[in-house]
Image (spheres, rainbow over the protein chains, first blue to last red):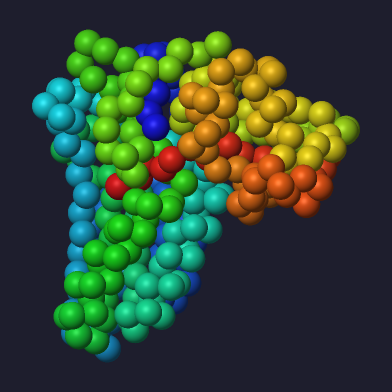
Length: 172
Length: 94
């Protein structure tokens, strides 16, 4: 499901990063530019022989329609808890050393980072698999919503699970 | 977004993404107590058409926990005064 959105819509976005960090897990929702380097630094460890970094950036089109801007909103307390539970289960399942999941909130200029995932593990196979699975789980479950604005048009709330341009819905 | 506590005998409800578009609100207060199974009918009355266009694909949380909205579960979950309810449309992170 997606809906149209008037150009005037502004989501409620925190002014400062919201973070939850333990020795092995770093979760962050931030209005600031994402830093792949700090996520990588967090997961580095002498006991890990492999670090995998995923950087998701925003595309300039959807089904060949030019996208002029994107913004992300979130139910932050719930998204933080969901992301932490994903990270904890990945850590256990793949025997990871450390994991970091960082997501952008608010306006995200085209071509810039919207998500950064870094994982480290003793060996490469586990790190590769965990990196991919963490991204898929995050896209499926984290309570974060993307609003795409098309050039010359209104916005559309994207839904990861159908991936199609939805019907327009007018507010009451 | 409504911040702080709901007034007495009310709960707060948060609308995200398509739900906030349809209601033109990010949050409001509704009278409590309310059986969770009656939430969608109450919203349909306030926002005609919202069930088919928005709510049918949404999940619901009460105090950050997902609740089952099946009709045969009447009486199992009651939304109480001061609770925080949220309408969760299909997500789209990444």
